[in-house]
Image 1 (cartoon, rainbow, N blue to C red):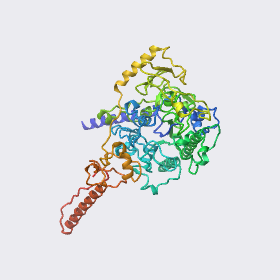
Image 2 (cartoon, one colour):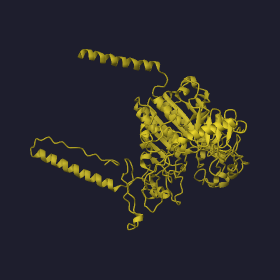
Image 3 (cartoon, one colour):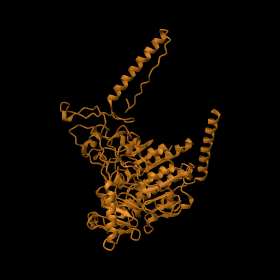
Amino acid sequence: FCRGKLAQTMSTVFSCLVLVVCSVLAGGSHPARPNILFILADDLGWANVGYHNSQNQEIHTPNIDQLVANGLELDRHYVYSGCAPSRAALQSGRLPVHVTIQNDDGLTDPKHGIPTKMTGIASKMKQAGYATHLVGKWDCGFATFDRLPLQKGYDSYFGYLSKSVTYFTKAADNDCDGVDFVDLWEDNAPAADSLELLDRDNYVEYLFAERVNDLIVSHSARGDDKPFFIMYSMHLPHYPTELPEDKYTAFGDDEDVCMLNNDYLWPGFVDGTEFECRSAFQGQTNLMDEIIGNLINVLKQEGMYENTLIVFSSDNGGSYELDSTAANNWPLRGGKSSMFEGGIRVPAFVSGGALPSARRGQVEEGLMHIADWYTTFCSVAGVAATDPHAIKADLPDVEGLDFWPLIAGQVDESPRTELAITDTTFISGNYKLIAQKQNWAIWAGPLFPNASTSSQEELEDVTLLCSTEKPCLFDIYSDPSEYNDLSDALPEVADAMLARLEELSADFWQTAEQGVDSCPHSVDTASCGCWMAENHWNFFTGPYQNLVITQRSESEDDENDALFVSDQVLQHGQKGTNYLVYILISVAAFVLIGVYARYFKAIGQGKGEENVMGGVQTSYGTI
């Protein structure tokens, strides 16, 4: 009987092994655990890259153009019209209508970003055996410690938590009563112990690029089979309009409106009359291309390019806020903050040695959203995309679609046929429906902005009147510039799309999760982040809810000014002062000393009993 059972078990095991071997040999549907480098540009204009605008000789993006030529151009890659919702969609695998469409600032809005119970893409990749790293902009929430990148699955993080920083001084993009404070974090703590110890001279994108280079080189040096997942979330070419002096060329026929919200183009540049904003923005974009080219060279030098999948996208269209920046989305209509193609359709491509050779040099016209990368990467890595933790918490599940079969050329049709951008903007097949008034309803030219460009106020005031009663309808395949409103010619299409959008919107969901302020009760929530930055994080942006802090207010007798102390402690890696933790650790140390003393005393007395000592483990966050 035993021998029979053993033989049956061995036969089953052998059969399983045969199936595994056959599936591997017959597979080929995915590259063998490729490295993944995702490069996310910030506010890049459609017409600021060479492969989209050959008419502008100021554009110098040879590395991006070459990656596109040797890769797969994603011509209909959609995002949200603002930074944070697109980033939340990428990190969570949900469309913005199922996570957040708010593009507020995480320092003043504690609901900003991704709910804690939603599993991030980095956690999925780590589950698949990847080393996970994030460099650059986060903008996915940081009011509570459990929303920071390391708690969302990244092994390391170096970047800024909020929307923007100044490129040289790293000053945060927030007005906290004029107080100078910085937004730069490394892993789970501010990047320096004080402002005095922080490098406030070197260009921040150079620091980010150096970190990505180091991650690639160090990963190569380890020589193991563990692949990497690196999210390089670039600052460039987002405002402020700052760049190194040697990267700036004044092209002429330019405008200087960006001087209103920029102190200088580089330190020492003080003459506002010399601002040439289009020249500066294109200089930032050209620099972005140079940095990307250097990264590709590092991958090749380390022998890692052939097994790396490179994905590039912008988080939204270029901004027409001329008082801060000078992007160009020609020939698409509109820009950032609008639902026109110029706001939500962005430059994107897949390249690298891990892209199947048959797809290189092609243009994919299938509809895709940035949220789809979550499921696509899970498919490539061999893990399920579904999110049981979110489902258990009654949150929307991952809804991104698996695009690898399309990217690899195994199928011809996009798995996505419709896309709800908001509750008033909807794409279905060839058509886009807009049911809300749109500002920035402008068309730019190949060389934009220029000396004759209208003022920012005039550009923003160009409107298209769309509503649920009278929606606007465009055929975005035959009319990508959205010149012709077809709502009168095709009322049945507009009505059907409006009905479908109303049906879909029944389960739209927006996060409202927030913690409890950790600042004095007299400080309102909108100001709590600023208060904590100044008083707790030593003038760095950082979490401001659900933290234990032992600082006392100046007026200790005023109950309204007493600091709130939550039931959580500062988690591992924080550098904030936490005397409560120190006290508990000290107590634990004394207990250990006492236990050891009794143990050695027992030995000295010749006792033969077996002493079993339970270990006491302490850490910041688990005591």
